[in-house]
Amino acid sequence: MNYTPFLFVAFCISILVILYLVARLRRVRGQLMIVEEVLDDIKNGNPNRRVLARISDMTKRMCYLINEIAVENQLQLLKQKQSEQAYKRLMTSLSHDVKTPLASLVGYLEAVENGFVTGEEKENYILVAVKKAYQLKYFVENLFEWVKLDAKEQVFHFELCDINELTRNIAAEWISDLESSHFEYEFDIPEDECFVCVDSHTYTRILNNLFQNTLIHSGGNKLNLQLLENEKQIEVIFVDNGKGISAVDIPNIFERMYQCDSSRFAEGNGLGLSITKELVDANNGKIEVDSECGKGTTFRLLFQKAL
Image (cartoon, rainbow, N blue to C red; front, side, top):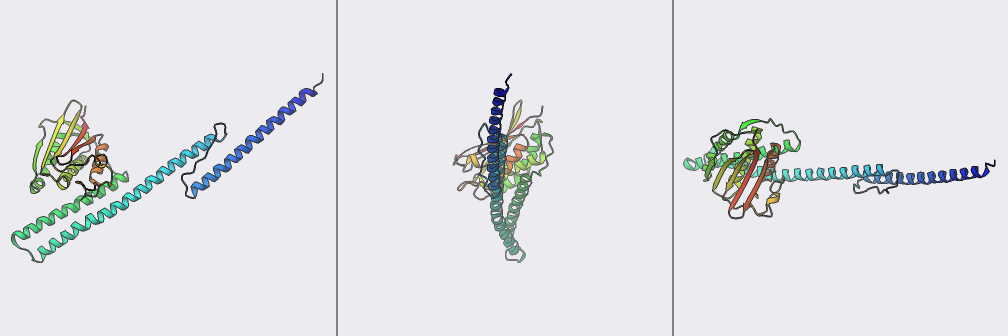
């Protein structure tokens, strides 16, 4: 039997397979060269480069992974830049917010110390100095809270708390400040026990921020604090009669460093409400806001009741 035709066919098939493999290898080599070029480009500071691959390419899986890593790296760089810009804005804001009340505080205290004021005027100077000192305390507390949250170093201790009693105690601490600021206030807090699993320290911080926000930024003279509950959740409601927040600004007020150009937050550093939102989220709660310019603002805190 003559095997020559079969050998010839086998030889031709072998040649074709070899040529196919050579072509594939050349394609792989070319793709690897492109990958190397893209990686070098990314390394040299161009995070927008991507590796294009066809479905039939042997290196497509590697190309997809490289693209995913490049996208993730680009997002991380963007977050880092945003964080750096936020820190710069924070330092600029705090340098002003701290310098101004500090200069006033020193001026008032020097006037008292040197005897430039006496009697009732001296007492007024001391009251103003105390107010400036509390402003500084508020700024510093916000700064420390922001740094801890940003660095993921905030430690939470969740426990069952009687939310009514805790809220009542926090509100009582603000009565003096409300009265000295000529605020009418009403606290509608049930006497019955109502247990919620929260971190009592951060819950206190949340309410303190809302009280502080109302006193400094609302522009009103009335505050109503009410607690409502149903079978599943507790609702803490802050209502003021101030100048309100525009519809344009409401979606952004919980963003870090956000300040409304002509609103109640213009005097602040844009940290208070963003910190409040993060602390509410950490306690598995929700915060909502309704406002109408010229009529006031309502903040609602929602927490799940303990089963």
